[in-house]
Length: 99
Image 1 (cartoon, rainbow, N blue to C red):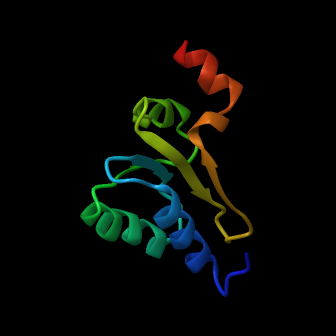
Image 2 (cartoon, rainbow, N blue to C red; image 1 turned 90 degrees about the vertical axis):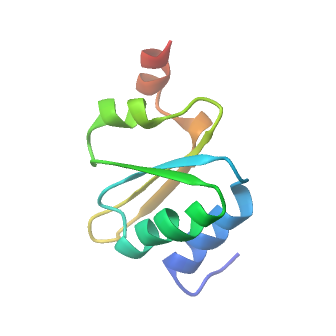
């Protein structure tokens, strides 16, 4: 799929895959409009968002809610790259720390 903007790509992804009752974690350096979309519009659909400081891996691990967190979203400072990955793709560090 091709999108005209990163915002349309992100909102389409989230609206397509997140069911009511799910949870996402995003870093505080994400694009402001993405954070606003998640904190307002997705909240009205029953989707919870937790924002953590970028680089605070302990806060990231603590923010994950087992069986509810579907995505961890982080965007680069200059929007060089955007990463949204499913929770089952978490790093080995996070997976081993949870065990």
